Length: 336
Ligand SMILES: Nc1ncnc2c1ncn2[C@@H]1O[C@H](COP(=O)(O)OP(=O)(O)OP(=O)(O)O)[C@@H](O)[C@H]1O
Image (cartoon, rainbow, N blue to C red; front, top):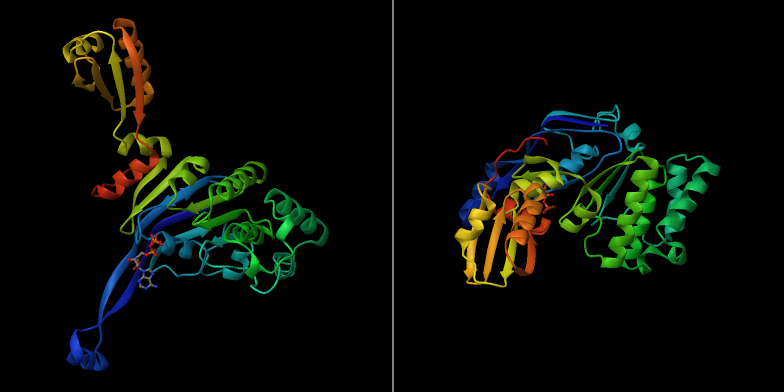
């Protein structure tokens, strides 16, 4: 569905010289700095995948989406989506995709969403009967019936965003781009949007690409994550692998009924690669790197060897992990 090879986008930014003299010199000769917003990006996406593109501010996500949607022309590299080269075959290409930019609206401000939907139907030359059936399904599933006939300017952000999603899907595209779709929304609306997207992906096999700063979006929706840093792709793989790679593992804290020393725990756990920390005479903490395999072993061994009064398992959240990635120097990671 999506094939991106060595994609690059450079921007030339005018560097203003300091002071009045500088401004005067700028009139005659301008100095420019080149910013590589996207640097040698390559990835491949199968039809029906739902994946997230993440990275801190300025990482290059929006520039990537703009190139994928045909708004920007790459400086170098190839993009082929659904058989199209987006920036070359723009008109045909946009009929096969849906786009939602969280910060920008595709609805007419003074019209109702319903009127916008009807206009979009004729722009996309959607089949009357099939198109109407599909629209009714979108309205129902996005739960927008009660306000779909009010002017867009009177809608709340959450109501508008659900209408934006409906508008982007009027022509039943095979591929949907969502740039920050849940930014500023309350938990209930986020939940509704996520349920809708999961259902769309499952029932229609729509390929969905999401950029987000909200890690709960990723956890709810995507198995695959692409992480960008300073224009480069630094991770492309499963969310579970991302957690394993950048997470600090899992910590298990044990409260013992009797005095227990770290050495005794070490003896019980044998050669298992883990860190054991003595909190006090009765409390110890075991840190394991690969939680999925090791956690059950540590739990069962300690519980069957010692008298344990309390256990707590502390796993790094995706949010901690993403923070961890952004604060670490980038290191290229390979596809899982
Ligand atoms: N039109 C432009 N002209 C010049 N520089 C640009 C332009 N658009 C983006 N950039 C620069 O390219 C880099 C990547 O920007 P981009 O908007 O793609 O990042 P982002 O990951 O989407 O960030 P955010 O999360 O803040 O939206 C930044 O350094 C930005 O200043």
